[in-house]
Structure formats: C-alpha cells, structure tokens
Length: 211
Image (cartoon, rainbow, N blue to C red; front, side, top):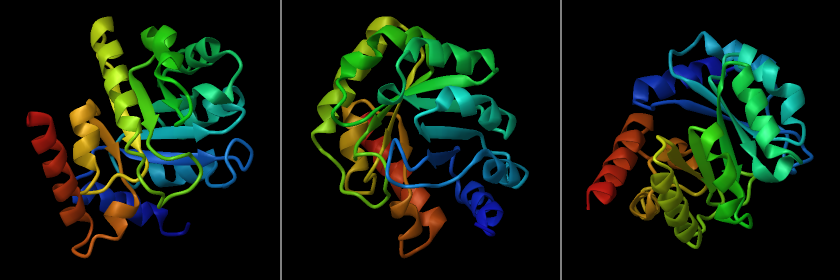
C-alpha cells in the first residue's frame, strides 16, 4: 500500500489511459481492498483519470467520499442495489459520471433502461472479487448484445471489460464490441515490463477492432 503512489505514476508513464480502483467491501464480494483515503492519497501522483469500480453493497453511502477523493467516474453493480436508477442518478448529482457493471450471471437487459444515465457499461468477464481469474469466453455474446443496445440508443457509451484480459483474450473482447479494457495480471506479469504490456494489449485490441 505504501507504494501505490509510485505505481499509479508508473502506469501513466507506461501509457495507460486511466486508473480503475477495485473497491471491495468483503460483503458484496469476499475480498477487501481500498477505501477513499487510499484513493485520495494516490490522486496527486498522476494526472490520469480515476474511476472506482464499486463492488460494495452501499454505493449510495460511499459515493460522495470516492468522488471527493478524486474519482471522476463511479461504476455501480446492478446486483448491489435495490434501486439502480436512483443510485446512478445520485452519482451524477455529485458531479461524477456513472457506469453500470454486470456480473457474469446478470443478463444484458439489466442495463437497458438506465443507458440514459451512464457513459459506460462494464461487462465482467470473470466473477468479481479476485484478480488472476480465467477469462469467460461466454461473455463475448453479452458484450455483442450490449454493443447492439448502445448503438440502437444512439448514445456515446463505452463498453468496458474486466477479468482475465490478456494478449490472448483481448482480441475476442474487442471483436465482440468492447472498447475499454481493464488489465492487472497481464500488466504486472509481463516479462518486459509495464510499457511493453500496455503496447502489446493496445496493439492487439486495435487490430481486432479494425479487422
């Protein structure tokens, strides 16, 4: 934890476009990670945008704290709240942009009636809670369905994927319609370092999208 400031600076230098913070509460998912104070401490170490992936049961309670800590976007899981529309509206009222995340078992239609409130849909390509899991190829059909929904809406909404993204899997996600890719293990375990990992992933995603 004491090195997080150095790490976000290194990710910026390596060519990353944004930093996503995995916020886990030990309830919605088994793991426990960061609070807003940790995010705030890292904010001055990079100019990259911050987004918080809120894998928590109380996003309404903590939303203001994460926005004040420096997160420009908050991503809320559709499964974590009773009134998703209200929660996304609350995020927007705080001056942040809102995203909605769908776990693997959650159907694409779960985000269909809130597309007017979000600028990003996150399709989880693993079950949330732990890094280093195997990419679920079966989620590519869901990505494609959400891409069709977004295009039909006429809105400028990004489709993000998170979980098992690597040089081997990023192409399939991109061809299905994703245009934002969250990577962790693929960056930090690349034998040539962060910059080489970012370049390789970006190149493979761009090639797949162009093809």
